[in-house]
Image 1: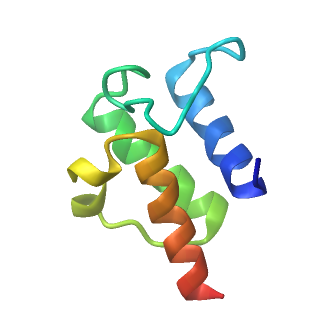
Image 2 (image 1 turned 120 degrees about the horizontal axis):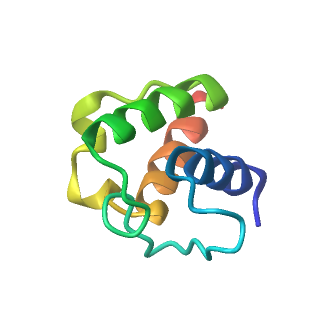
Length: 84
């Protein structure tokens, strides 16, 4: 597990209160499985911006490709790679 994945998973757990026993996979839906509503998703993206030093516009978190844990993780990793 990469450091970025661990840090993002930790943020998701804090935001959703799903607990450490819940298994988060790439297919885990942020809205359905973790029960994050639109305000939670905006808060999560702002926390990711702070944690990773990237910018995530609101319209990017509202896309089908970022609706899952894996999709959002790929978005963050892509932004980190561009900043490197």
